[in-house]
Length: 551
Image (cartoon, rainbow, N blue to C red; front, side):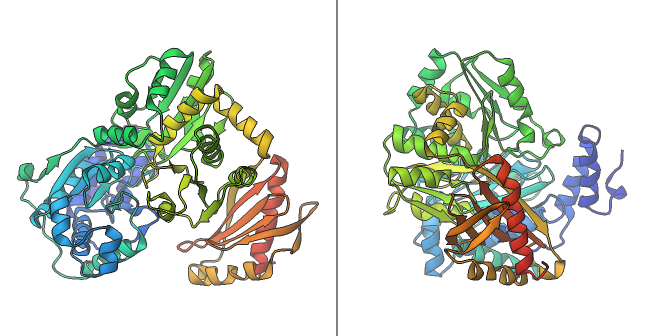
């Protein structure tokens, strides 16, 4: 077995571990040594959902202390716009209301959380320690405790070599750029200073830094019962009385044990991958089509009348559904949720989705006389429609990458909500999910979304690529005609909120979105038949190459 001296850095050690997780698991002790001893600075960037980095490389105890200290400095900010975005009146308010800290079940998650708690307590800030908890539970917990904010140590669905940090302000939603830009600015300044924050306690002295223990699962259950968007009693009754099977793949994540606490124990609910495994069996723990194989096998082997399964990522904010006939990605499930909540539950509001998602929602909304809002990628962009004070309130808000929430629910994406809502759909419609989806498509039209992309020269990375592709929206105006395979299509709408989306007269569309960090252009498309997808992709590539002068 190789030891620390055999590896020049954590990245090479991770490469060895992930090449054979069953054989190289013991090398995690080497990773921990790198994480504790590596003091090399890192560039801190909060993406669409927090700061992430490789454990031992850029996500180290030293760098975490710097980011946590930058958060504390942000909480002390005299900038009114920052404090307003966090939702506190000042630092005294933060100290009194407190900060919730917890983690998913990643390697060193507990240790990272205790490090953060120690720094907060040094500043006299009340701390709530949640232990292992899911992202939507932090969001609900903030509201239930009226806490100032939360710090959740998780990189969401990233592979095992990653750790991460999510910061949620007092409304429970993902931090907006007003907050994260400030944290980035302070953290990156601190990275260049010669006096980094010291550890909050001596080794072995952790006992006093645990904060007040809090059961976020209990608060989450109280939250959903208070909000009443979900009918928990109807869901329980359905499982108890009907011939059904529900399969839940927790992928070794923080949602394990949660559904039992909400719905009770039942032989009709099967759970997969609930044991501890920091390495996730060697797979990327995302709710992907490939990772659904275990769920699909359980559903195929059952003869129950109602069959439904889900896979949930480690921090419980992403979900993918299936029944015995098909997988149902969020592009479809978001539309089903919109229809169900609007038609069956009578909830009034609008549909909200990120711009790269299926237009099935648009077709449903148009026929029902309901509005739709399309936002940039990033769940934080749904906040204006999710607040209870919003003039336009979302019936459902979802993004193509498996995240969703619903009316009067958390401002964070919530896989537990997505699971419970799917069971209630079956209870009310008396159909399996694919049957309900077929009914919706037969009434509102068939839509077939997909995504792809191309790589471009590295010289085009960043603003150069964004600027070159911006001409697409100027060239293709409403009414412009173009060939999609053998068909002539007319542009009926142009949406420029995150790249350029051209919607055609038949309801099909393509979206061209440049990466801001990689030499890549991403294509999101939707055709009206499965066979037409290839032609829409070809059109997206042709338009992109013309804009880049490569045609």
